[in-house]
Length: 311
Image (cartoon, rainbow, N blue to C red; front, top):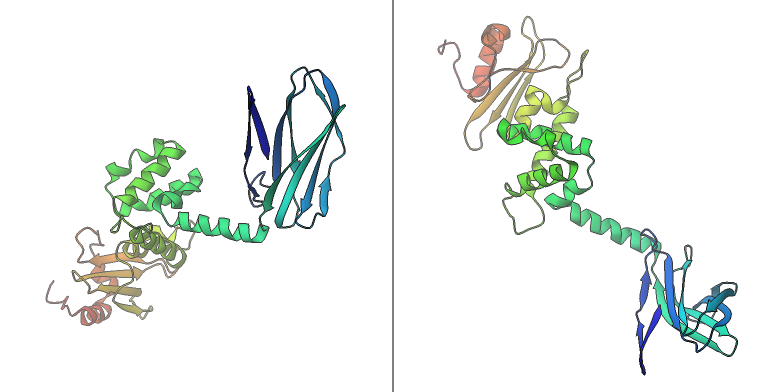
């Protein structure tokens, strides 16, 4: 609270207003330090009291024995003020030696716990918006999960070294990966990263495949396409009828006209890609036979394509 330095005939006193923050580790502890000067060895006591603005004492320690050698020494200590109500206080340290009694006081503030918790949460939320903050609090397992879907955006060789990195290096890798793709680097928020992981979360909860081995939704064919392109502009859903299995058709009309045909041949809700005009996607060679003529005609009418004449 108050520290004095004596250099020859000059005495320097430094006083700072302390603000305790009960929402942080050791944020309710107050530390005090004094330099005492004596011409001969001396003994006495030191006592600390905490008072509010009205003079009411909230804390008062028992007298603590002190012993000083020739020339004096440093007196120090600390108090844990956890539970002290928010407000303005003074801390007084009283030192009694054989020939004198001296007091030193300084004011401090105890912050409101709920307000500080809200402020800390707001700061954390604001920091989490940035690429660096988003990955900062992740464990190694979470970082690995965040990196895995990047296979949809980057070449395999670009991600090959990730598994061998340290945890801190993985955080830097992911931060730099998304910073390079940030359309507005002058702002804290990276909309592209937020949109991508939003798609992954949606795909994971919506397109999860059932069976003896559950496949995460983002790893399915529909999940992969959704992660790349988002929601289709037009969609056709048909349930199993006759020999034709249930099927979905996703049509993207924004930008390049792109479509995908998925089919649930197992009847368990596990849709696989049958065909697409996206050359980066590998379809099923006999997809037309799988659908059958009625379903093929239905898909063609939806897309405006005559699949029969195209055979």
